[in-house]
Amino acid sequence: MENMEYILSLAGAALSILAALLTIAVKFVKAVNELKAREGKEEIGKKLPELIEEAEKFEEYSGAEKKAYVMDKIAEYAEEAGIEADLQYVSEKIEELVELSRQVNANKSK
Image 1 (cartoon, rainbow, N blue to C red):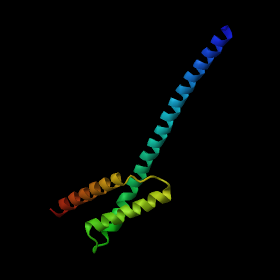
Image 2: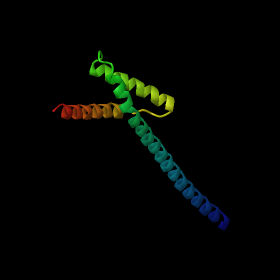
Image 3: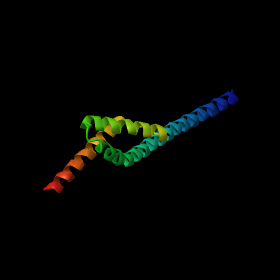
Image 4: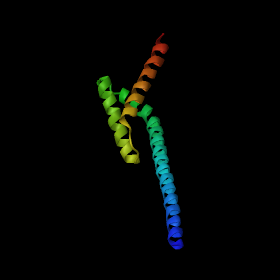
């Protein structure tokens, strides 16, 4: 009987340790995924100005067509680089950079 209690006590301790290790592993995987996503956003953020400048050379394109061009190029770049492109983030970043460019150009013309 004493052996059974000892075995159950060890099994309970082992299960507790296993649960703790699983929790740590899950948190670690989430942290790694968040880090990869952040690094991917940084890489995309570095590439965006170059692509926006390239799209601006297409004078016959509308603003929406230029944005679609940049979005397509970013999707290609992300696939080649093996990173995940958050297209909502990319869209917002394009709008932000274009607006900044407009403000700078407006200030230059004054």
